[in-house]
Image (cartoon, rainbow, N blue to C red):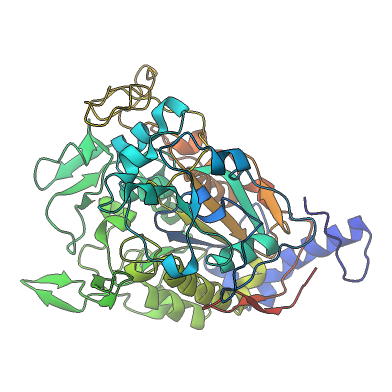
Length: 523
């Protein structure tokens, strides 16, 4: 806890709690009936849940020295608020006498555009080296196409300024992990289903680097997505969209570039592009970042638009819950925000090293969160900012291995020697356990931005990507996915909230600098 004292007029604790509960109970009337969109029956005051799912960042890559920034001239300065809690970051020993082949080092704001690191399922395990965390340069750095030592780089509050400011104002975790090792697609699938096993359809035999023993470990595109390339796979089983639809709760996945620019041979062409951080045109839409397109039940193969704004989030519509980001803001403007929304930035703003960077990412995050706070639903909203994988960037922390695997692509507990064949080991799997799901994997940042988020708080509880899924399941009483979904063992995000305290004041940042420009509820 930060030790912050509420500077509003004093109310005894019981009166404050009654005030919060009363506000929660009458909120449907205050919002003019908006809660009738399937969000009225929740176990917490959170009626609107927005997940902003970004790309390829380890915790140490963004928060290694939080809350201490270098503050060189010409960069946005960051000064921590009194009482800011410490995080499990890089100690002086790890910074100056690191067991890896290079010491960690600060990346300057002028160096925001970096190379993409090797973040495949096997190299990430080899970099971990049975928990010694000392082979990042040889395995995840060596595959980047640049100086392998770059994998040890980290940014501070002079570059990822907005994220550090959000952490000061709201809650963050320093103990949240990828559910499994591997790149974007496993992370996205674990977010929405806690499950990467169950490949049951494909257009050609899957590459073992993408699918092992019917489990997704790489980045094949979704079979039910006509904007996909060749080498697609589909999954059986259920996801959180199925659970929400069964309860009649409005929801949607909203991704930049989802709306086709044209058609060719009767198929959509998702051709919208922007210039990426590498100076090259980058397609906004990345098919393997869209998890619901792997499931027949929740796919929108032809990328059809909603037939009307009023039907956004509704299963009866042809879009089947899969939309462009434009549709999210159209729904918001009409007062019909879905209860559960997943937002995915266009590629050039998603933070993925190689074609995006932290400054482009910051622009998207800040503009999005600023707009969300201006909505009437903000008073009943929680925004989760999370990432799909670590990109292979160095992080010194290892989680417990809660899911063991023994396939030809596993290598966590074997020798980590460049050029050697993977050992095939990630511990001894439990009888009947699905293979190819070694995890938890690398550590990721996680932030909760909400009027009910604890203030200037760092949560140390063990969580993973499927903890976000679990919060949705619990908040709307959906039950569990089943079939060995990680939701059954996921840690809770509840410790990042304080539902007896309410701080709806807006915290508006500058999208270029990340600095605060308006704080309606300062400490």
